[in-house]
Length: 350
Image (cartoon, rainbow, N blue to C red):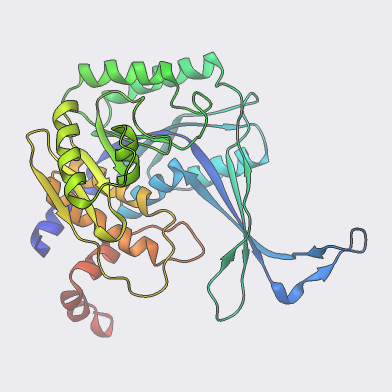
C-alpha cells in the first residue's frame, strides 16, 4: 500500500457509521507504589498502597477505543452495565468518547458491571508489573427482557450503519449480550442485509455464531474445526479458505509473530507478516485493535490485503504500549508504515 492509497482509505473514516454490539466492561488499573509498602497491623500481611486509579472501557470497549482513535465518525454501541458504581464509571467513560451513541446501552439492576481490576506494581525506570486480577462477572443467565432489548437494537441499527462488530467477552454461555436468541436475530438480519459487513469475534470461539465474517486466532480456528493439534501456517491457510467458502464470508486469523491472514469465499488467501518487535511488548488489546482496524478499513473501501496491512500495523503499535490496553491512531499508523515521509514532513514542527 502506498501513501496515496493509505490516505484515500483513512480519510473515509470520519464518514463511517459503525455499530458495536457486545460485552462492554470496565478496565480499572490500580497503580501501586512499592516504596510505600507497609504491614497491616490487623492482619500482619503486606499492604499494597494504591497511588493512582485509572479506568477505561474494556472488552468491547477496547474495540471502541480503537475506533475512536481512528477517527470513525459515529459509533452506535449496544451493551449493558449494572446499576452500580462500576456501571456509572463505565457509562461516563463511554459518554466521554467523541462520536459515540449510547441509545442502545442500558443499565439494569439485574446485572453486575463486568469489571477487570488490574493491580500494577509501578517502579521508576521499570515497566509496570501486573499482579493477580480481581474480576467481577455475571454468573446467571441474561434476563429475557434484556435479550429482547438487544434483538430490537440490532434490527434498528442494521439500517443506520455501514458495518456491525459483534464482540463476545464472557466465558459462560448466555450470560452476556451475545445470547442464543440474539444470535438467531443476527442470522436473520445478515440474511436480510447480505451486503452489510458483520464481523464477529468471541473469546469462547465462533462455533455458535451464524455465518458472518469471522475473526479469530489460530487456536480458535483449530477448535472451531474440531482439530486437536496445532496448525502450521500452511494448514491455517488451507483451513481458513475452506471455512470462508463454507460460510460464504471472509475469515480472518491472527497468527501472533507470523502476522495476519485473510481468506475470501472464492478461495483467495492473503497474509501480511508481523512487523518487527521494537522493544518490550504487552500483547493485551492487540486482537481488539485488529478487529477495529479490519472493520473500519473494509467499511471505508479497502481490499482485504489493504485491511490486513493496516490492522497489522495497528497491532504492532498497541503491543508496544505497556501497562494499559492501548490504541493506534491514523497518524501513529502512518508514522510506522511510512517513517521516512513522516520524518521529512514533521521535522522542526512543520
